Image (tube, rainbow, N blue to C red):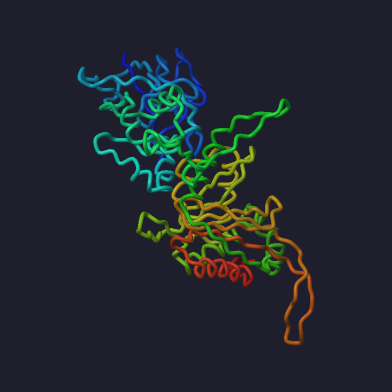
Length: 447
């Protein structure tokens, strides 16, 4: 008999932790190879962890809604055979301080995988909390910044982490019992107190009033993740927008002409999404600066064009599956990839790697009837394009024999881009080039 320690596997690049959402097997249950044992959720995707051996569950190391780090033991399974060496946990030496298990904190409050993104929003955090004697994680520094904790006060808080490091739980527990912070200063013992005025650094946030009939709902895990991600993007990037109206009458007519034969030939519905995506990919080739990211003072131009497409979930939230190397696919390949990812996204069947490493994102807000919008950049990218609803519009049509008014199908493209490295000319010319590809649509399909 032996004991197998099933650990939380790596869930993809940048994913450092997951939340146990539901135990599918209980202590005493028999499991076979590849049996689902526990459901977990990351900020990227929800999935199951399956058994790597056959045996009986001896211990569940975490409860539901607790946060597990990558590599930590989820469950201990008793097996009849010999336990693989990689599953054994080395004995802790007596000199190593025993870490207390952190108190249960909702993962929605603080998301480790967004630490780097949020930390880059304000470089002054590092300057204000540059402790040389004691290490503080970006997450701890960010909490201290928001709670107006000075460096001196931070240094006085006892820590339970390795080498007395201050952990997230230590800081949160300290804040629960922290005395009220004085909002006045005195220059001399006899000077009148100076009231601190609200500033952009420490804005006064008005608290909403709550009536007796109001309904109070807890934000879901994904809603909190989206909230943090969008707020950090607005603080990090200098958002600017360009808009352009596009005549897609020719594109509309072409799709109407071929969609039935396309469905019969390929077994796939031909939506406007892969058509718009084709034009975006061509424009990204022409303007590679939009297919980049910013790392400090360095601009990284991406070789691969990985297009993310914002997809609405049944609960109203959005997820952004990514089509890798989208420029290597023809229209048929793009259509199949779009339909497959959209279907699996709505059924919560995406893999972690399928929502990572996007280099540019577009969102079809026309699906919801919106004419136009100002989308928020999906970090660490530098641009995002929103497609509005296609409408019949009166338009001036120019001909060699004179102008006349006609009915055309038009759409508005809304391009948000990071003005730190993308100037107005590049951002405007890029969306103009997308419009040109749509208006002068050409396809090499054999129809």
